[in-house]
Length: 181
Image 1 (tube, rainbow, N blue to C red):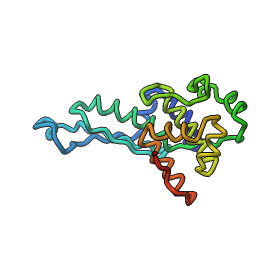
Image 2 (cartoon, rainbow, N blue to C red):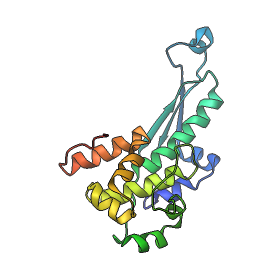
Image 3 (cartoon, one colour):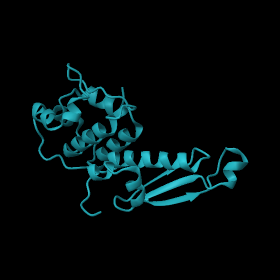
Image 4 (cartoon, one colour):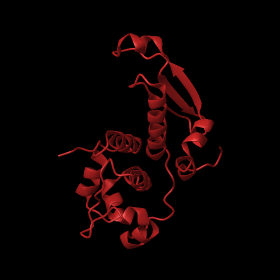
């Protein structure tokens, strides 16, 4: 899917997303007893349109692993696929342009959204887009997002995969890794 965006990929139904993926099943090693060694319950999804690959092999049920893999693929879209920030706007204009982000802020202007909240991944993707647009400078990104640098770092640290992605961006721009104090 040349020219497809993150929004296109994440809006697909499970069946549509699965149809776009190459699905491999295999026998996973590790604990789980005799049944685990006899059934091909592990699932690997390869999405040629984005180049992403995810696996799920925790359960002895192939159906559960397929559902987990689909969830992980959607998370991978949010983490790995960047969309350009059209303009680096002032905080008020940015909030007007991104109401989904505005909904995750408190009246005091703090970004508060937990990992289990359905809004977490779309907001994390938007935050990563802004961080990349600011060449991984968190102080500049926090100014655009209208939050404090400490609040931005707290948010990024909520999910290890998001934290890792920011670390890769900072490395790409020859900046020191972020620290959690």
